[in-house]
Length: 211
Ligand code: ATP
Image 1: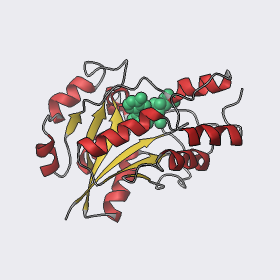
Image 2: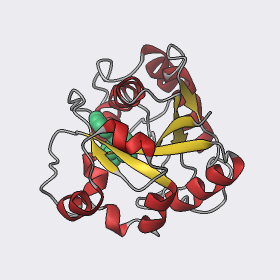
Image 3: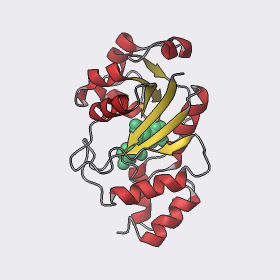
Image 4: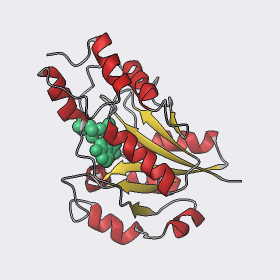
């Protein structure tokens, strides 16, 4: 039987409730067997984070502890160079030939998706599931052209195909971003509403994101 696996890649600097709500919503709504959160070691599209990849992975592990269908994917953590989604999906497909992959992104990422390295390969290896995010619309950037070419509205159609579909989801909006959380923590403001309590405790114990 085919295993349906969602992958939410990111920097998770730090992992926040927006990531977890999005991963949980997708897993339930699309009836995926599991969703894996895949922290990168060195992000391709931004500066190297100040917090180590092992610390970011530890926070992900804490944040998913109450969700049996959410897992930590360690694939990119030990890679010495920048992580590219197409390479990671290629590796996962080779390692797990009986699985079908659904790469999960926020609408912000869809808007510049055609700047991702080898983006057509991503769609040969996986479907794309796009979560709504406040401030970003399907009218912006790359989204209209991609949706015209690859968009589907029906989950059953997508599940029948091995890859190559893009589906927009109607997840509840979560106005949360890691950059805003880093800013709040640096200014010693509370980020308790947007972080799992265990993640907040880890940040405080490890003295992360200080000015
Ligand atoms: P930053 O603010 O530092 O850019 P971020 O909050 O966007 O970070 P990332 O780790 O870069 O977090 O995001 C990983 C993935 O999760 C991306 O595809 C992003 O679009 C998605 N994502 C992040 N936050 C949300 C959110 N609140 N709602 C929906 N998707 C989100």
